Amino acid sequence: MRPITSRDNAHYKALLRLCRSGRERRKSGRVLLDGMHLIEAYEQHRGNPEEVLVSESGARRPENARYLEGRAAAAVTCLADALFDALAVVDTPSGIMAIVSLPQPAGNFDHDGDAVLLDGIQDPGNLGSILRSAAAAGFHQILLSDDCAQAWSPKTLRAAMGAHFQLDIHEHSDLAGFLAVYRGQSVATVIAASGSIYGAGLGQPLAWVFGNEGTGVRSAVAAAVDLQLHIPMRDGSESLNVAAAAAVCLFETLRRRQTGQP
Image 1 (cartoon, one colour):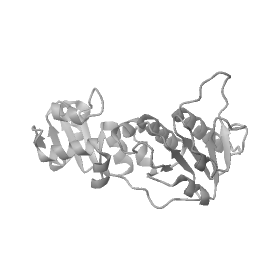
Image 2: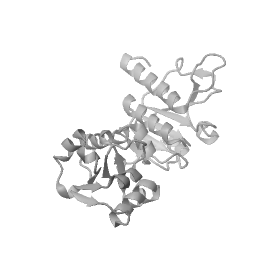
Image 3: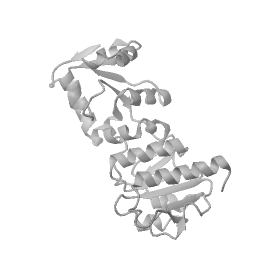
Image 4: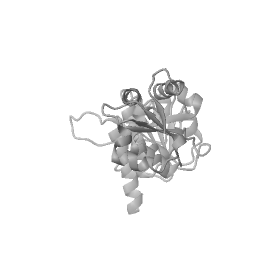
């Protein structure tokens, strides 16, 4: 186990850049996972991490200690608690992190498969929640517009709870261009739409489109979809949070498919 106790250590400085900079993550092709849950999710779907990081106190926690027993000494770095805490994205650090290769999409766009298109989702928590719902509902192809939050930021990773590693995530995507050649049915959630998600037929394959928290789906993207629908709510209710709206739509799709309804 390699110890690091100084902020001036070159490897530690590289870890700080990796934690704080999306540009550094893209440049290095690596990302930092915070907590045992994310590490185990990565290992289940992608393989072994490149390096495991523990704090001095975290190495003594039973769960972390059991995990470390199976690691090669050269693959584990032990950080002084203060150094580890500076990398953590939560108030109560887990004591363990891992560096992994940044997962890449399995291939090019699948114009014949299910998809979730996210147009300007700017809050990392919302983005992570939508990714988590998409994975649970069986939608694995995810397209993000240029102005979405960073898919691999620490906050998005934490909100998605490991869903990233079950998905093909395409950042900086041309959503309208994808929809123009998509061979399934595309549906956007639009508050002013006359049709309800519960009354309309949902095709297979299906591409759901969800828009920005404040402005919704942009007109150019909305114009490219086959169908615009709304989620029925009681009179006087505010519009749903986009992550909640996505969950409603995705699990309505799953319910219909499991029960054989169109």
